[in-house]
Length: 135
Image 1: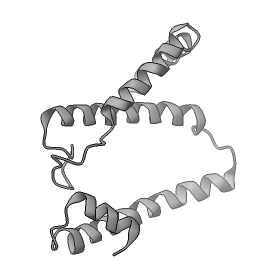
Image 2: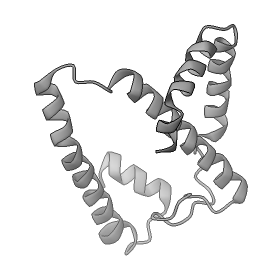
Image 3: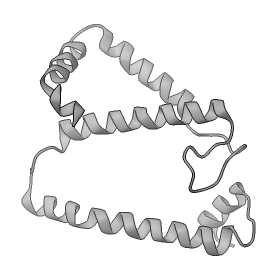
Image 4: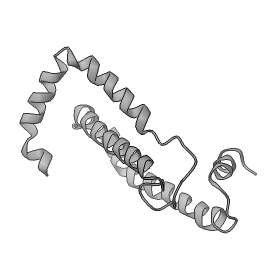
């Protein structure tokens, strides 16, 4: 809602910034920020259903910053690319199957966590190994 109130100003600023010499610097800054805020450690992980996933405060801050960065980037990209119907059939297929894909993925994640990982107290890395390579 808030971003809709200032939409014209945001679009004007984005267009202005993309035409300046700062645009490559922002791309490099984005890549640097992405590299810092990627959750790539397997230590001090918290509980599966808590956000942020990590128990260390510094890692929590970095992970949360990275999440907001990706939300912001995804919103702008979707506004640029996917904010209009380009094909009626494709539009119906994607919008009709998105909820099913989300629900079915989450169902299996919960089933594996509740019936396999928790009862057998499987740590993080072996759980990932089992998911990809079987028993």
